[in-house]
Length: 239
Image: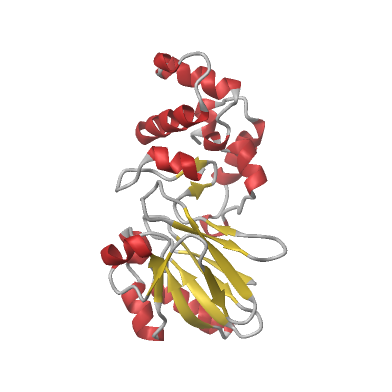
């Protein structure tokens, strides 16, 4: 499996992805808002975009569908429950569905509600698995729930970290790197790293809970992880 990550450079700070079969050059374009950039990258490498996938229905992920489909005739894939809001979806997806790209690439659909209630992540069936997580999981953070999402559901799916856990050395190191990095070359983390630096994955950490109790005294001495997650998301919404 080959992966090309494309930095949009727009005000929304979007990344797009081309997931490619190395044998056939067939490519899946993921959330191609700046569709011309995706097409240019594919042409440069000699690849053919044969499928388009939206992780969810927000316009900054779907806005390039029509242009890219018009240029390539590639079908659009998205969560079945999001299809009517996106429009022009050719294949509705559900939990456990597998997307095949060329002869060698298989991507399993994970139903990951929270940021929206019809969000898909892709897990590659490769020797070293890769997760394409849309707006569900960010470096050291989790997706917001402003536009049709639910933090409780985001919990079930699963710079703020240091505010909640100032002594987290791993998060501090990542922040130092992020301050000086080229956005187009943003770090790709592993889930192991995220468990060390992402407050939303550190729900039983004593420091995180103690600081959360300062803002929400009613959570008590031993809040359950779901409560911690939901209250963290509430704090992050206004942080």
